[in-house]
Length: 302
View 1 (cartoon, rainbow, N blue to C red):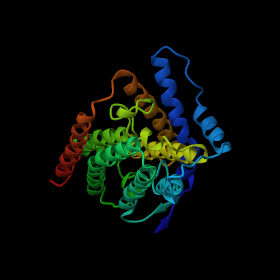
View 2 (tube, rainbow, N blue to C red; view 1 turned 90 degrees about the horizontal axis):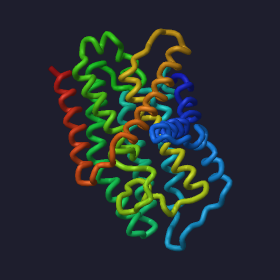
View 3 (cartoon, rainbow, N blue to C red; view 1 turned 30 degrees about the vertical axis):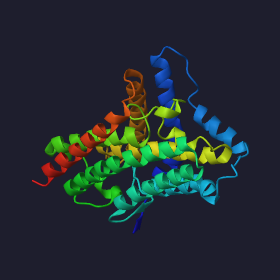
View 4 (cartoon, one colour; view 1 turned 120 degrees about the vertical axis):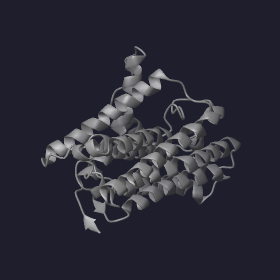
């Protein structure tokens, strides 16, 4: 195990909620509205942390521990993802730990939703687990394709090895991986066309319906963890699609950060230009992402 820079972790912890603000402002601009302030997600987190939490008598310690475990898992995962500099923690095979930590965060949210005994939250948990079984193979196969091409099993070395020269040599498989990661990025974060984070109709909700009974600091942990998760998947996509490795510390860190903001704008444009897919169509989209990852892996194995 080797230590890296704390800069990627600090960027993730500090700027992750800003991505949500950029997405919301982009959607508002497309709709012709002023929209909320860019820093509104930070204000929401601050207000939630100042409130108290109300717990149902039917819930147990599982419901209380879910948000904390989920946030802790995502924070540890953030320490494994590089962005303009090597990650704080890096070792061969850390990409598997990254995927497992995100799975732990999802499991904690699902089990907390089931602990409420609510039929609506159980429905959302069922949908979340079903779609994750299709999204995780696409993610793992995409990372396997990058690892095969770069000859590394660590996120901190495989992503920096994706350079302009590597793109010129293997553009088709890398493009397929980028498309697969984009679909996984939207699916894992509950964005349109997979889910609508702004909806309040329980029958069509996936992630939001699982956190209906959470409030106060617990909901703040969930929202902040979701913002971090958005940042982490975006960092993987930007690290692949925007290979800036000049050797200048601030340029190498600033270019991916700018790419993250552009990805947030792109997400807002996607959500403003298309409707949410029917639930029966979501598995087809995720299977398509898996097929793209398989094709990319086959191309790099030739």
